[in-house]
Image 1 (cartoon, rainbow, N blue to C red):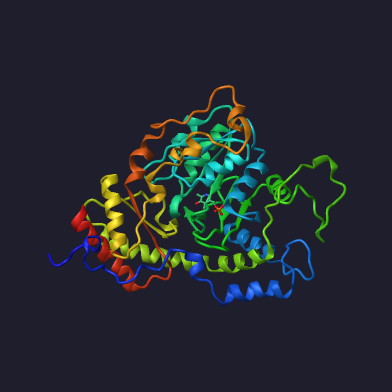
Image 2: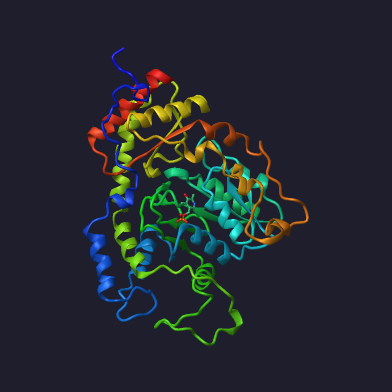
Length: 417
Ligand SMILES: *Cc1c(COP(=O)(O)O)cnc(C)c1O
């Protein structure tokens, strides 16, 4: 044996860790700098008025509309804000249920609770995204929407999902926070449902540090979203409150995107195709060279041409091996993690025990029957999510980097699997 695993004191496959997988941030350059300085030079960081507004947020919204083929886009402060704005624009609140996949980030059910509704958890299938058959099973007279989450770049089966939602007469919200640029059958994810929600947080495909956006084709939903995100206001073109809207007024929030954020968001969006092209190319090279390894399988990619390519999501024979495998690979300086620690989102204690910030367990106290979450309620995700070992890819990885990733995976697999 000439090779010893780095975790056992051997020489790692690489001397230095791989470039961290912050795809958008790693491409920050002169473009972002110039756009940002334009806003600073104009001393106009607010989108609706100032000394000389550059209309960066509006330009970002226009490009997002054009790119996704949506009638409307609205910049907001985060992906979580996008979800809350989407639900409020759709009229969802206390006494309502929203179907949420069991494999997602805390923000998805968290936004439902913030909107005053409660999440109902759907199991996933071998794509590790929501199983479309769950929608009809879970739908009852309280259910108002389903939120789909294409996990780490893998599009959801939008034709089955929209058909099921139509049958149940509920809205579809697409939480594509992790999957900007993903497509299903040639069409951008986010544009199938009633509302699509984007995130521009640091870990996402495009980033402004924090930020987000929604897209929709629905006139009323858009108008309600614009007003909800802006204190419920009606603004004239020059940016001042209109005084003749008494019939439709409501109280809103402030989730407005600043011009500083909009400037960077626009430049990032221009780089989306480049990022996705490179991620797909890199992922394909790696996947092709490890697909023969016994003991490593992959989640089903719903549409290979629509996957963002940002994540190598491996499934190992069991949880123990996935922990060992990811630790050993990380020791080889190929950072490998386990998505959500292998845990369905409803097992997080604040969700499982329904610990909200409000009194008397609001909004869970809005139903005559008790809402309960139990272990075993989504058997597929509980069995399979713990087995994941995940490598996040950066669009700037070199040929040598991809060779190292393959070498590392083969080395660790040989000893551990
Ligand atoms: C990151 C993320 C969010 C939240 O986005 P923020 O911009 O961080 O608020 C929501 N849903 C999913 C699936 C995410 O991964």
